[in-house]
Length: 132
Image (cartoon, rainbow, N blue to C red; front, side, top):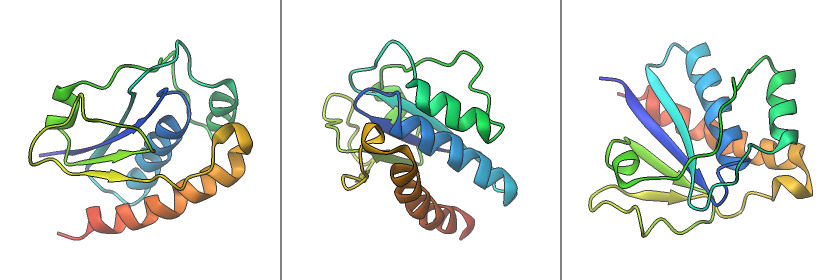
């Protein structure tokens, strides 16, 4: 069964999108059967243009993807949930832990620094996924 990692940020337009796209790509490179999804607690209408541009430069096409509202079903179906400093109490599911990555810099303050901080944590997560 494929495991899903759900990344959630406030607007579902930057950190969670970067994390999901980078995680999906890195997992595929390692041959890991895992899926990444992103959502927001208060989704913006569009993904941040700088995020779209950065991912496009890496060959990741978001194909018209838009931020979406996190739902209890998303959390319930996730193997792991990672939140970027947002409150998931409205979508919380008993028994599904939420890992908080609060110290990631704001993408608006500098996308490269935020992406580097996310990538460091993704590496640890990928090691956990790869460990049976």
